[in-house]
Length: 217
Image 1 (cartoon, rainbow, N blue to C red):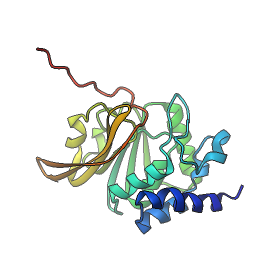
Image 2 (tube, rainbow, N blue to C red):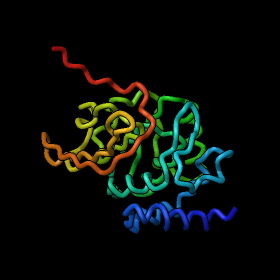
Image 3 (cartoon, rainbow, N blue to C red):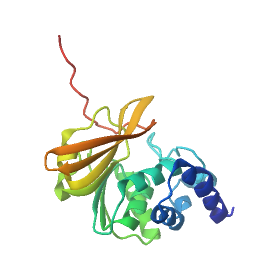
């Protein structure tokens, strides 16, 4: 299979048509070889508009969603990034190409180990992998200039906002299927946050996510 032709087709028919036009993002999507991050059995579908199953019932985001989120994060070379949900390491690889350091947290050790191998093959060294529960963020290296939560949350824990640097933004998928919304939360001042709804989608829920308390009448 000619992966380069498939990659160009994916960019033209999926990514560009979803209003992803930032030349930096398009360049990184071209450079980072997505086919090397997907399970071998699904390599022929690496560029399909498809949420790729990986292991443990988890899925990769579609290519257009990865690219759109990457554009919305607007990463810079000095940024410190937190990713919750490493998966195969592909999103971490994309973010690493545009930022200074990515801290990626995965609660399944085998997935983290797999991602480490993928990143090594791609010669990406500015990703630090952590195994643990990131359902309320990862305070050890906070504050972060950008936070990306790859699994959906019923509601956003306040801890994520507290771990965000002033001027930084986080993107999370909030809600329960099928009514989930991708949201960008920007910390404009120490105690001021602005929220923008980006689009509707449905992704695999984040494990161990805190369940919001119910009102009792």
